[in-house]
Length: 181
Length: 181
Picture 1 (cartoon, one colour):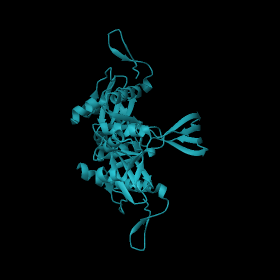
Picture 2 (cartoon, rainbow over the protein chains, first blue to last red):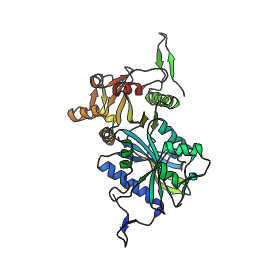
Picture 3 (cartoon, each protein chain N blue to C red):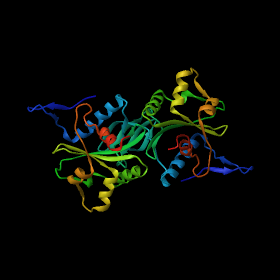
Picture 4 (cartoon, helix red, strand yellow):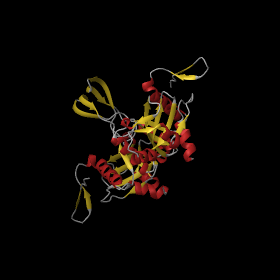
């Protein structure tokens, strides 16, 4: 496991550079912590690959396909967990262009089948992280024609995840508190 | 959805040829039925691919990797489901050589995290299908030095799945009856 942070002049923990991948690293480190401590098994879905040509077990032509599901899935205490992680530099809203239509469809399907499906959105410039449940995402999309979800909606309907040290982003603790599983 | 069966001279439903892939087709058709009827979402895991060379979005060298998990995963009523499907032509036992060590490790991990992890084994020559729960698989491996699990163990500890028409192999109905979820 690796942690990427430093202590600033006010004795606060601050993020390293490389912001674009920061959330993914934080989640991967958190998932390693969950696995090592038998809290949960959360897997990163590999990017789907379309194989076009394969000669003697060697693939010689293939292409990465567009994601049709979410980044992560797994289980915690027997419950099915499924989520997409996104960063935005916007201070005021999360642009829905970040999500593909079939990803939203996937989140809807998992929600309908009783799974915990959600987004983790990192507002990097204000250093806030939120869980937005699939049902609240779908409700927003159904009721609102806007092309981005305002920060206020996250503050009202979402659940904030406080950044920690080990694990860096304890999102399951937040979920467990809400749903008491 | 496609179904592969025919009616024999005794008016019984019998399987088509192509036995080697039969179980996989039956499970895939069953999973389509589950999805279409909003009973469950069960996914087939793609074979992992190791990408070695990629030029301008075209992958020019890659290899299929050995499976380290199981064939299928997903959710039913919020519960995490995870299983491996295997066929054997043996009439008396299931050879453990069919399972790789890290697959057994995976089944163990899912079981420990409260998920429903199991094998579906098809004894093709006697036309019987069984669910063997992860805990019973692990128990057998821990207690018995034998290299195959006798049919009797499936009869005693496993749960038989009766072959049907639509869906062809309703394994979740069997699980739901056992665990009342």
